[in-house]
Image (tube, rainbow, N blue to C red; front, side, top):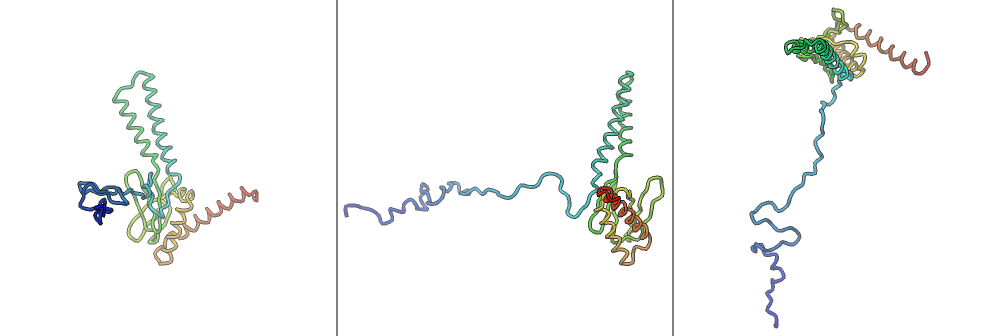
Amino acid sequence: MGCDRTPHADHADDDPDDPDSTPRGGPPAPADGGLAWIAFDTAAPAPTGPVRAPDVTVDRRWTSDRRDAVCCALALLALVGLVDVGNGSLTPARAALWALLALLLYGVLHPSRVTAGPGWLAVRGLWRTRRVATDLLVSVRHGDGLQPRLVLRDALGNRLEVDPKVLSDNPLIWHRLDTGARHARANGLLRTGTTVLQGMGKQWDATEARAVFEVSHLD
């Protein structure tokens, strides 16, 4: 009566057609039609460092063996370099020769990286990787040569050589190989080398038992 108030005056601030209006319960919408809310990504950060495939067992001494090979090569390079510097005979050609010699020494000392998973065993050398299917093994034998080697062949024609010391130092890798060999033998594939694996297993079991007895003062 004394007031001339529009029935909808209380909701004038909510008029969607008014560019200056502020919606209740949230920030003002941008005039350019952009997003009114900023979404924050709350996902966990990606893991850093090397990612290892699941169910893969790696030679636990390979890192230290490779470090030793690098140290030997660098020590040789430093030694011959210091001798040349002391004699005053160091030249770019001789430095390149010593560097090449150090690289050759590292190539000789570089350890093979042995990995194993369900049904397979792999050996990665300096230039290539060899892999066999342990559940398809057809032969296992001792290799010829000065250094002890175990030669494995599978039904797919793959072949690799592995140092038995790696197997003795890594019981998990040995377990992968032994489990696959048992499957191959049960399927009638592995007919050559069964006694080799059994003999190695008994020898390592006896060694581990002797170590336990020595630690327990039972020997």
